[in-house]
Length: 190
Image: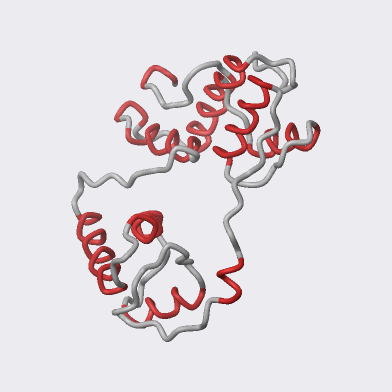
């Protein structure tokens, strides 16, 4: 069965089990570790703590630029900068160009990985992604911190589970996450 998350747990056992973000944050608070950031960042801080006893501070991004950044008129020629934020203003601008626009994971990653390109390039990337989605073999990438979503997706992709309910998928997930090792869906899980 799944062990309790305490400072006496080994790194190997810690890494071998699935932990909710709330459990990780609770452990951090009890041990004087910052509980902020993504689940992956928190897990990395806990792993360092368990290995070395060191309390690693989160890397803080400077917020000075955000406040002093002048409000600019957005256009298709707006250049993506290192400090780019997917804000309400940016969403509103893109909705004037692409009525169905939303910040998909793909588009958020596009902004992060394409500093120096323009909003015109973002529009092209949006439409390219929309075209890819029309292909029946298209698979959306699910980020690693969304293990549950990936498991449920893979559960229903297995022809063996055709006609099964969401409750059955969740039950299979709940069984898998209690076990040590990978939380990926395996055809023999259910």
